[in-house]
Length: 244
Image (cartoon, rainbow, N blue to C red; front, side, top):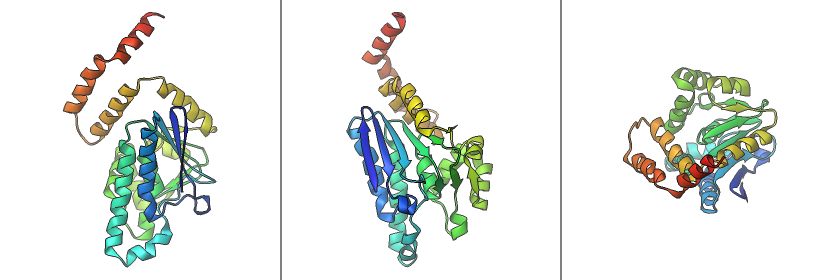
């Protein structure tokens, strides 16, 4: 259900299960992460994540839940597979943009939060609904939610299990951009990002991840800082800047 297309330096990962509003089955999470990593291996410098049809992602496939209720081992595998897949997506060393239209619920919100930036169409709708189902939200997803919107708004979203629109999602920090023309906005942002150094972007992305986890210092980031100063990219960009 995951289609990966590469156009130059940009990869597009599309959830293709429109008849189920792109709900992700329990066995699909590893494939999601593998396709994202495949994009990096193919030379992509930026990854767009979206959904086919009228929805971004309605979440995990509720059709799997009856079987999970009766199998403790399957429940554990489901949780770990989902958490591991989203962590792998979050750690790919290139910028990732979620392009959100229509429904974005439950694990679909978790998928969007695992991306670096979220762009939404005005008609997008967001909801985190485990409380309605009598289940919990994986702690890694709660952590990402709190990092984006703060504990108060996270509490509101989780405790009410309510639905918010794209404007409200932007107001509280769940999405960064709301656009009437999602594709044009994504293209414009992509071109701006790709004009920058791939090495810098990788180091900065890793630094943001470390900071989100509470790390103010990191030896690897120190090494990247110093290595980039000695690289050819800086020399070429300085020469171009001075030659203007």
